[in-house]
Image (cartoon, rainbow, N blue to C red; front, side):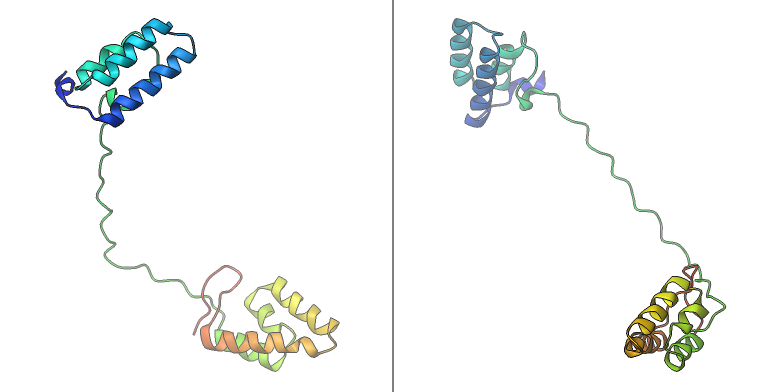
Length: 159
């Protein structure tokens, strides 16, 4: 192999010696073989010198003896869309929803947008707190007027 002529460093020698110790600990090589192979590993100067030390052993082998990995293909990003699709607006208005929330602060604006669960929750809070909970629907109405919102289907409310 052409890579067998590449020089190695101390890190590669120590990895080889560590893996040989693992094989020795598993009983795959005798103490004499272990001593000979570790001595040869520390004396190695190229990859070709280390390869025979692991030829008759099952994995694990040093990672640098494995064939090089195939690089991952690089894909180009998809081309940009020529134009953005328009967002379908709800047939409900953010102005009507906001005004209903402020004028009738019991979640009526949320009932209008189709968000029944949120409307019921606001109504329940207003009833439980004996009217003190109306601050939540009023603030919600101001937010609806300023930023808009979504209807029950997730479409933005009409301006």
